[in-house]
Image 1 (tube, rainbow, N blue to C red):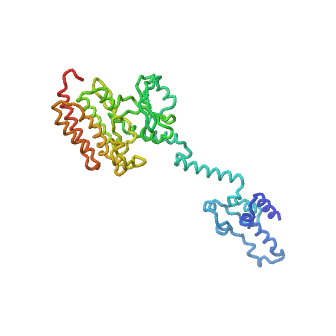
Image 2 (cartoon, helix red, strand yellow):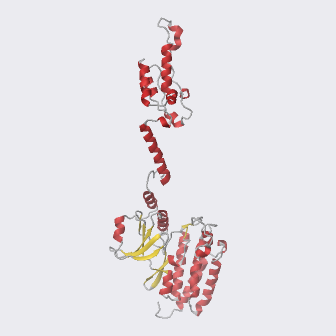
Image 3 (cartoon, one colour):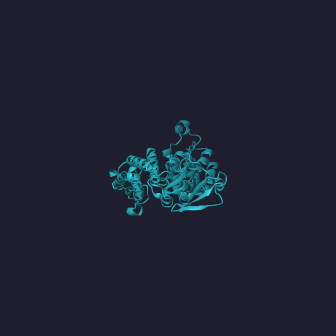
Amino acid sequence: MLQSNTACREIQGRRHCPECVRDSPGWQSLLHMHTETEVSPAKDTHPLENHSSALPKQRPEAHHLDLPASTSDHVLRSARLPPARGTRHEAQQAARVACLRPHCLPQKQRRERSYQEWFSEVKEKFGGGENQRGCSKDTRAKRKLQLVGVPLLRRRQVREMIGPVQRPLAEGSYGSCFKTVSPRTQEELVIKTFSRDKLPELVKEATSLSKLQLPGVQRLVGVCVETRQLITPFAGVTLKDYMLSKAPSFADAVSVHLQMCRTLQRMHRQGYTHNDIKADNVCVSTQSGKPVATVIDVGLARPVGTKGLLSQAIPDTDKFPWIAPEILKKTHRCCEASDAFGLAYLLQGLGLLSCPSSCRRARSILIKWVVQARRRDPAERPPLAAVIQMLRALHREAAATRPAGSR
């Protein structure tokens, strides 16, 4: 009776529902012990007549347990088989078998289960991997940038770079950017600030810029994930302002476009396409009296062969005349011909400039290349190497006829 009372106290302390208690192994063990007590043989019976009761009882297998049909595999694997029946320890162990129905779990187990469910939801929401479990968006962005070698800056370092004078430069859907002078190094810097929800765009642009640290491409100073800011050196005025306000000579204008084409060719050899060549994404500065062109804003730069750069297709190609139609409509993969389309849009400005009579024939050949590069089918566009040869020949002729004493 001591065994039966112990099992009863164990089962009653769990506060199970009647159906759970009836199906639990502890309750089955208790019924088995009551049955053995009622039908136990008399003491004066010969031992050989009850030789089966004298043999040690075998340990029941897993499929002998009376478990509910909804039992999961991992619960069956983790369940421990009770020792041989007939002992006090057996009754206690069998009664402690956990109830397998969620509404009958003890309060502590319900808390642990709810925490596991909450943790799984958080993990799925933030997309945490095996090494990023429970990490925030900023932490995952920092890890991605560190893998590609992007210099990471802290808030304090960014504040030290920003001078007292801040000149706004541009503003778009990504955010805004302004020009400042570093108080320490007296270097002109451009700080591009992204919106709080534009963290993926910041990571993509910083990653592409770190992989394209080539001559003629914008140099990367660092990235601050907390403030969503990307810091680069000031590369000069835009090509649009340079052509309108600086009034360059024909030779200098050809030199700027030639440098831009060579920079794009280096990017293609590196395995990337710019996909956003326009007058606002090319800066021009003057060094030793000569113009120096720098390609900036690689936010749409992708490896050659990438398809689906934009989130949605844009059927109206006239809205963005410098972007190739296959990129706007998402019909083809980006390639060298995609940048040739945007480059031809910029080279149209050279046809509007007055040039020496000796350069007119070379310029007419260049205009033919521009017409072919503006074709809708990327397979029909000429290669970029052809326009580089034309611009090189045009620049030699323009430099030879440059008046003495001019820039």
